[in-house]
Image (cartoon, rainbow over all chains, first blue to last red; front, top):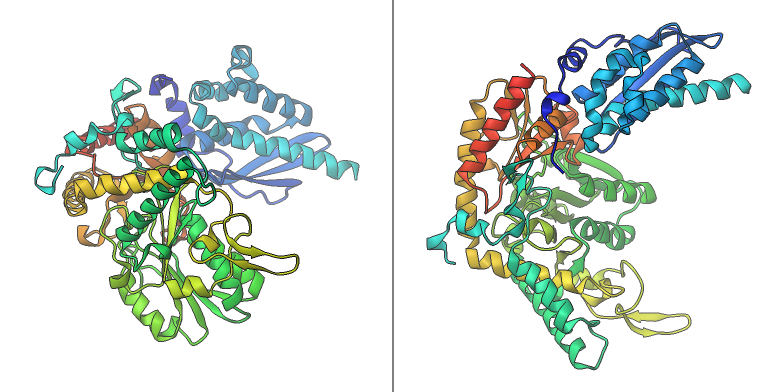
Length: 150
Length: 411
């Protein structure tokens, strides 16, 4: 399979988030923290959320890895502030669908800057990089739900 | 082919995989430390075995089985000659280097290492020469000690007298680092280890590939290596160990072919090396590895080593001039095997690899199964370009062009 042009992968917005990640810090008061790593390539994220009454008040992360993984996490956290848990779940599902090549998901305006990552779906070996942040988010939502019910 | 006529361009034509374009550009394969490509003779040997001689070894009393057994054992003799074994029975077939190390850490380790005993390895090791010893330590209560690295990724040997004690039972070290390319002073460490009575195992996965290895001259007890990194098939490798050591060890796995006599309560074992080869082995793989050895011997290991050294010097020179590059490992080509581990500005190694791939250039990016070495340098990954006999200066030129692309994108 031919690799599509690199310009579809390395968009300026992605490189900008890679260099100046948003919300990259430790959260002082956190409701849930998820550590996610890809042992194959070394991408790593610790995602921290502060949740009150089914709403994400704050989202921060600490991590390291390639431009795709770190930019995706950075963009994701910017959308999580003030986001309801239900909306966060929809966001994660929508982004995952976009990575699977779903053209409708890629048009979803709720993804905002994250749509810059659409091109990653054409680079199969890099999809995991883009998904690590949202995988952590989905895990965090599950963990939080479990803690609430117990 | 003889040494006098060594020409990488001619050699290259023997490798069908290299005759292709990737992403619209002729393939530049610089991931040889992960696995080498296979010459046509090896592919032909695998096919010929399955088409003409396929049968089980050491079992049937029929013609095909005889032929398969002869070819299989001839290959063992070739592998023995390859590393300077005293006799073919000192070669045990394994799935590769990893299984060879696990064989020793298990079959020898469980009977010879106890609580409070010490295992000495280095920070530079591949995970396959760390984890088997950690597993052994967990089961026996032994302690693992480490040879540390200097800033060029070389062992710090000043500490060796302190690290080797009368509790040191085994020293397990790599001949050549897969992560940094460091050629390690194995002989010196082996001599010191023997003074305290420790067993010396060498991970030769990156060693026997590029240079003539003589286990007698190295003065070690075990040498583990793989076929697939030296033009052979995957799934086959070998453990060389001194005959007396193999004789003293319990079997690694039980099954067919490794027995002498089976009784209800007690059984006895076949002689070395068959004692360690339970089950139907990778016969085709063994034959393929023998053929790879014939191929490399035909080209000439001295000529290959010379070519790789010249190309490494060229690559080091050109790559050092790339703005923002950091090359890890020894700076002198004399302490360096044919691979270069590097980072480039703030481009993550995976991004480097993706950009190079779009130009048809294959390199490795990641921790190279050497996380301890990466931690030593405070990084999580590097990009790695590794050279073999069929690489040329033009491959290096293409790599440099690719790195300029990376600079352009991450400017």
